[in-house]
Length: 311
Image (cartoon, rainbow, N blue to C red; front, side, top):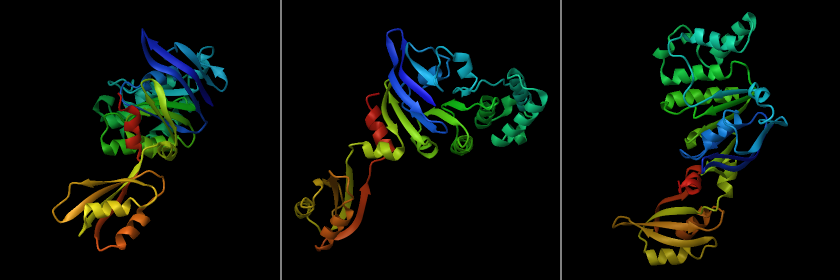
């Protein structure tokens, strides 16, 4: 549905986005993940036609953002990080005003405002001043604003920024409900948000794509090694190291700080296989007492850090 081809944006001599190529499928919830300053907002602003690319193109249904910007914009809803809402208006009056700007007739407008008030959880606050609302409720009003024209594509820039945990969950649930019918692209630097909400994640760093795929695909494609941690009693490190290093796939054994009674061990694993069973069998055949055995696996957080630590 959306094809991004060699998308590039310069601010003077600074390259904020560098030859990004991306295909976004219809009905997909895509999270654009990256640290502050990675190029997320610039990418979204080019996708919406707000910024003109320095080079490259964006095609939506085979139409170029360069040649058909107005037509493409009409199929999009866009919520920037700071929702563009008028603080001195009632919620209902504001949504009514936005509907008028969209050229809706009276019947269509009434029905659409009702639909959005239910979808975004605004029914109880429609006659409150926007300035009196919490940031989470203001974000809901912003979502209703972005969706007023029932766009096929919804683009959200940091939609949960500055919200408390309960508000984040509320906005996340709304995005999931919307995502059943829309193509959604949203940026975030909150890893748990991307994992919980997105069908697919694109990690961007220094203006380039560092990883692209589902959480599972990104984790499995990483060369980051796994480790197994042991806590043993009645064990000598030299004996433990010698025994565990005989297991195929173990690349090293390291001693960690422990108490006088216990021996804490880190076992480095070079293969993708889960070796806990083999490690347990090795320990069981000795007189060591196993207090703890746990595996530290690859996570999106560690992979994100790996891709973006230079920032």
